[in-house]
Image (cartoon, rainbow over all chains, first blue to last red; front, side):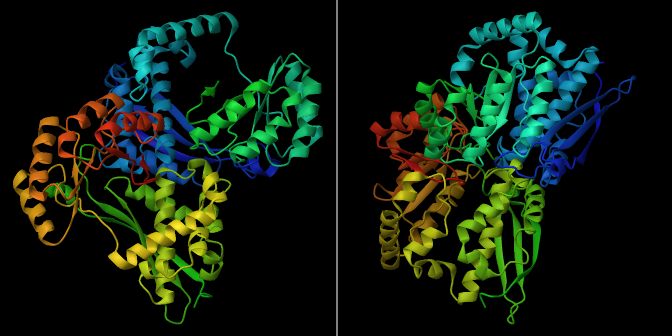
Length: 306
Length: 306
């Protein structure tokens, strides 16, 4: 079925009114309507297999991502799954490097989101063809093959050390099979939730076995101190706490603010400032290191700066 | 007329088939159709004044920018010019920080291009209200006012040194009034032009008084050596040559390639590699400094790395 051709790509603008109850709220996105650009790939396979993919948005602007998916669709329709997965990295570059469209990207913002929705749908289609959930497709994959699906063009060290990177990923996969896929929950502590909601949701998450908790911060320092203190009491000293400011601060503000939350021992502060300020992130990281607090960047390129 | 309200925003997708004759071609954009998302702001002023603005695209994908302009238009229509220019920085932040739409930006790619088209139209409207060309509006402006129109949020040093920056800009403006607005020409040396075209266009530009010339490079080293040699002979040792690779290389490739073009004494290499690779740009800059060649980044944030 790998020979099946992708015959149609459709994309929908799906919105959920989550802002009504402050689900998903943070210091930067105070009224988010968690929404998606939802992609369906249809094929000419006998089983009429389809691939489903999405990227997450927060409401207004989803129509721009939908427009971008439509613009990219001509690069996808007509290809077989075999062609795509035979050179996944090349397929990524095709989407991100069209000689005219790359001008409105490249590899950032709306174009990145549209590309992600399509790639997610391709991965989903591949997993369905193999008759497995996606995670199993990934863990069954040879490390070298997995690495070959990722575009490391601009990471010279990674390219020359692919072999070593393969080993690291292999170790991770083995650990995952043994211990399960590690995850944290953000759902207890959106910024717009009351202390009562927070207490109830956090207690429920603990009862369900969660051990890692993320709290939205950055709008009001006294609120943050109260909420972090409450959660730390609820989860105890051995569970993990992370905090996330969604780009709310400038560099010095981030350092001062997070220093005042250090007593609650957060593992990291996520998106303390503008995502484009690389040197700013480095300064914050350096200042917080003595407090044992790391810095994490945002969704588009999630890395931990040590 | 500053009290005039913006009553309508319209936006058109305008395309020009420049790829037919390779105008605008470079190592990354081999078939560009230089195009624009074209914005018109209508007002309720007695004189029915309008503001016109655009951002440049290279063909496919312009419809996505148009879609983004439409999405942003609700933040513009209904405002008076006075409100906008009274807090130009705040207006920029409004466009780039809408609580939902910023997720698909912020301040990059399609959203940045759409914001720019709208801001250009506002500047144009402002100049028309003042009855001056835009450059004159700018040079007549108090440096502090000019600075206040720009968003320096993430540039801490600039914010604390606004005064000094005002002085720098004042000096620039005085020089401009004395010597005219400095510019270079790229129109002689698009990558897809023949040596004959290049010779003819370059000779014409020299005759018109141009002193600074930019050449597209990066597709084929031997071609680049031949073309740079030809242009340097045409313009002589005292005119300025710049080269532009439009993000075509990785870091080491950039250093090797440009080193081989050093004998033609380019002032800078523009966009040697991925625009997001800040440290890569720094490495290239460091390696080329002993050759007297600078590094310039691209259109969205043009800075010279010394």
